Image 1 (cartoon, rainbow, N blue to C red):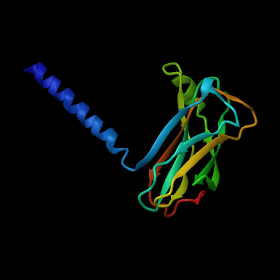
Image 2: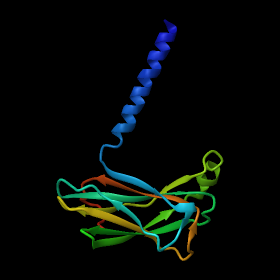
Image 3: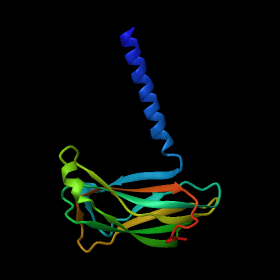
Image 4: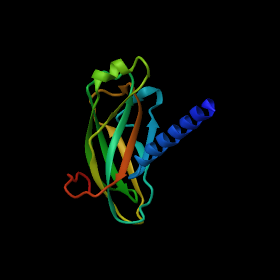
Length: 167
């Protein structure tokens, strides 16, 4: 009976944890990471992300995530984001990413990667339109070593009171 109760408790806690994780993704519209071959990101290498077609006009929040290794020796990374609709440039913005080295090197002993994220930019999507995001880096050093993956996170939100960088 004791084994049954422990097993039941573990299943219940697992279900509760899964529910909490899934509920945190409520406003997530799109997310994707792309690997950087051999962790060498050249400024001419453009990463392209295709957003799902919106079923209504809406504002969304965009942020960029970077997974880096010890080989990336800088405190920041400047990413240029170009928004395209029907293969025409709609808007662009620069999103700086601060690479947190305080936890980064201590964190590296257990995992080979560290995640860092940009601030957010508001993007307006129109109903029925196909949008792509094109990312490049704007650092002087070329190619950048130690960037293993770059991702985008797009969340549904109300943009009242938020700075609009891309419209």
